[in-house]
Amino acid sequence: MTEQKRPAFGSRHLSDEQDVFSHNAWDDVEWTDEQSEEANTIIEKQYENRMSDTKWETLNSDLPSAWNRFYNIHENKFFKDRQWLFTEYPELLFSSSNRNSKQLLTILEVGCGVGNSIFPIIRTNNINENSNIFLYCCDYSSTAIDILKQNIDYNTKYCHAFVYDITSLNPMPFEENSLDFILMIFVLSAIHPSQHEQVIKNLIKYLKPGHGKLLFRDYGLYDMAQLRFKNDKCIEKNLYARSDGTLTYFFQQDELDQLFTRNGLVKEQNLIDRRLQVNRSKQLKMYRIWLQCKYIKA
Picture 1: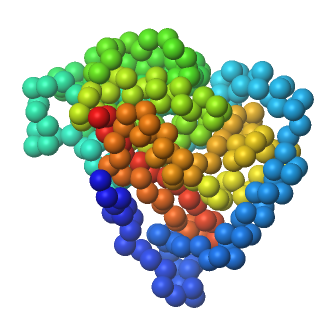
Picture 2: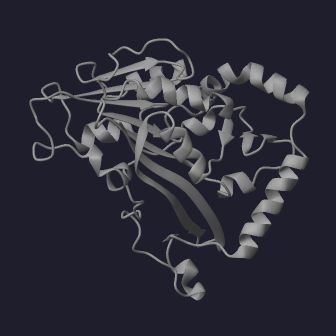
């Protein structure tokens, strides 16, 4: 399948640098050779001053507690609800006109946190106990799941939230080959790259053959977040430790394509979302790079 241009926010392009602070964001901002060279230099220096093995061993041993601490501190106030999901993934807008209303449609979101994707999906689609849509959502953090279940829109008649480690081989609470969609939004980057292969293998066996779809979005190489890391935060190439003890990895486009296709998925979309966000009051430029993918189970 041919690679598609992102349609959602693709209409705002910066043609005159003098206009840069006239809007909050610009789309499809290509980098100059100088910017790429500067970013490479920063990343090389980060790696040269990477974390010691001893510090990494200590950090790694504490990873199981890091996300619980995060949600104990921030509760449901850190992340905003992802209303942008429906422009980037129109597949998540369900109606009788785009699906067979008599057939159960099932969705799994992994790394759901406190429900910033799940609840917009429920509200936007008016999902209720009479809908033929059922949502599963899981997170590594038991604290996050406890907070999610307290939301007024959580109802076990159409949503089941559970604690789960997607790197494990433990069974999920549904059959293999049964899911229409798996949603992974800024999730795989929080897992050590040595486990990425196992995670994808674990998940795709639950997608329906022929049309079950993986919807994926995560950090891309050279994103502003990567370039801002200080010395002693780089663990290995493109892998970093945040100040709260959680991990973040920055992907390359081909790397993801190879990961997905060698595990039985077919590309529908794999694009780089390059966006220039600006702080107009402080006159700051922030270059964001995300990777957005849609892959179908063969």
